[in-house]
Image 1 (cartoon, one colour):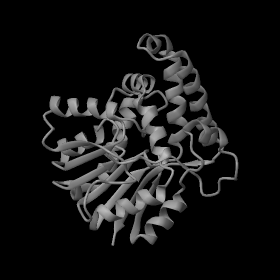
Image 2 (cartoon, helix red, strand yellow; image 1 turned 135 degrees about the vertical axis):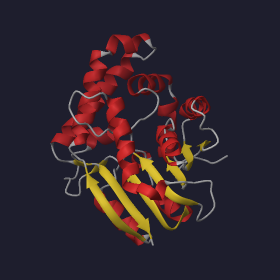
Image 3 (cartoon, helix red, strand yellow; image 1 turned 90 degrees about the vertical axis):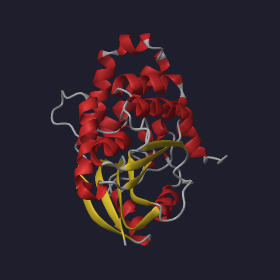
Image 4 (cartoon, one colour; image 1 turned 90 degrees about the horizontal axis):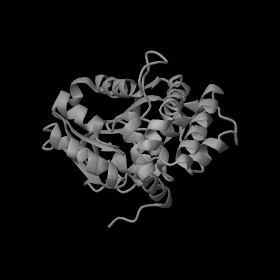
Length: 278
């Protein structure tokens, strides 16, 4: 059995908890857990999150058809099911939360997609596949949780075929973010650092990738986390009834506000990054 790093173990314990499972499955609908592309402030997170997946798929276009895809940090497997259903892709969703994975496997069966989508318990710092296995590696707002993102990128480079594409989103600090200002956000996610657009460009170019595009959607960060906070406040009594603790709800509201504040201050970055392996 793989020994997870300390940062990965922290994320695993969080997402396996009853509080987190009830919160994300109830508020997001148990399909996606990532930042949405909102068309209005009032749009539900479920719809905006689906739009992010669709937009990323549009960016890949025909390259996705019948492709072999690895989704690192795949959550409930919603993106994997979308790629399988709409493009015929064969997708492995690698995810550390056994609780999320159990839900995702049931959804695969219910949707008739269990032959195309495989959900694997695992860790993106130690991907359990051979070199040059996948046509596409995909990730949404997951690498944030690694304490060794360089290692994650090295694993992506290893398992991706030459000519393959790596497409991802990740909540990042801006390239010009002053030192020390992200303390409240980092404390919330129990990490010491965040990635940045510059970090991903430098490390992936070092590993033999070429940046195709960074489609910047940073403005969605405060909109997303602010909307989640408002939805949480509106549904607070209902969510408590579904066995979410008072402490979790209070900490979540405080943590979401830290993301909103940092986003409005210009200290964060987010968008769709696409790199091609040379």
